Length: 183
Image (tube, rainbow, N blue to C red; front, side, top):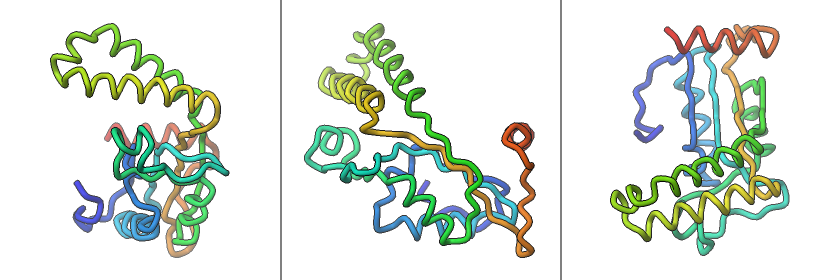
């Protein structure tokens, strides 16, 4: 579902996982403005996205991933993302790089794909299976070499009086989120 079409509800929490890469660089402010209006005061946003490293240019539409995997993809730099979120009234509480974890995850996905190669080819065809194997293997190398990154940013919409409703420490916040998710 398009984030612009989500019902106007006051949500306790929103998670955006693997979607931000499809928000164009010119649309970032609109994206975060919309998510902020959907959150109640004290509401939390988890934005999880592949990001470009500082100094790396935007995703080239003619590159392998730009052409075959994410034709509409644009990778954002985490510092600019956080600055934009703060400019729009979010309080960023935690930013975590999962780069090494994701490199390992990609290598596991490649191993799983290769272990079940015949089934994958039967499902999507050899050309598409090869594209994804090459993309995941190449991306693992890019994450290991710090050419790509992946960040989780936890932000919240503070109440009018400035209170956050957030626990004071990261472990307390994790417990609080687990409780929220298990409802």
